[in-house]
Amino acid sequence: MDKAFLIAFSITLLAGLSTVFGSFIVLFNKSQKTSWLSFSMSFAAGVMLYISFVEIIPDSIHVFKGEHTSFFISNAYINFALFFLIGCGLALFLEKVFPDHKISEKISSGISTKRKIYRSGVLIAISLAIHNFPEGIITFMECYTNLFSGLALALAIALHNIPEGMSISVPILHATGSKKKAILYTALSGITEPIGAIFCYMLIKDGIQPFTEAALMSGVGGIMVFISIFVLMPLSMQYKVNRQPLFGFITGCVIIGLSIFLMDSL
Image 1 (cartoon, rainbow, N blue to C red):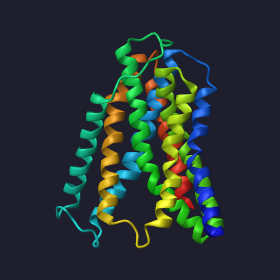
Image 2: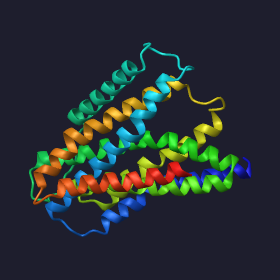
Image 3: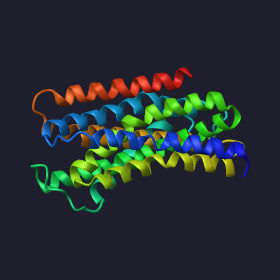
């Protein structure tokens, strides 16, 4: 295995695991107040919706419109809507059938609500893990071909991953009371980036099929939008004291927006 691979893979691994840093930010906040939970849930919703509507959905439609895409249906918007709805349906299915978990009693809310919080954390982790996979491919390829620009891109993606890590660890920590589980779920969502690097090096030589890429992005967009609107924001409103849902949502959008701007400017 050549030296260039090891360097590019190591950088991609560090960028992916930067999600754990976001988890540490949450863990250092000792507050058990429900107002913090309200802010955190809406923050996660802001991160998810911004990524969906600014990155994932436009990119998927753009790929569906590509002249080299083998369309399942001739219209790009119909293709997008189909896989977007499949993603929403998958999120609904997982939200309903996901097995119950031992829930912490630290927060003064009902068990059923805690289960919803836990499931939302798992769904966020799954959707962001899928979202991080192509980022691993991009980071690896750039580092492998141009180390200097690859380092800059990896730094931008690492900053981009921090709020994502926060959005995963908040519901897991509040539902289970376990710091280890919060870190574990966050790390597992980030580990798909180095997996993407290996996949790129071993299997993808001519690039992933455009239709597959667009379908996957559309489905992930559906999952994220469903979780944000029907799971995270209702929970945030349930725990609100003043205007935490609004402030949390705006903060999440601003932070993830700045990180995306930095990543796109490189």
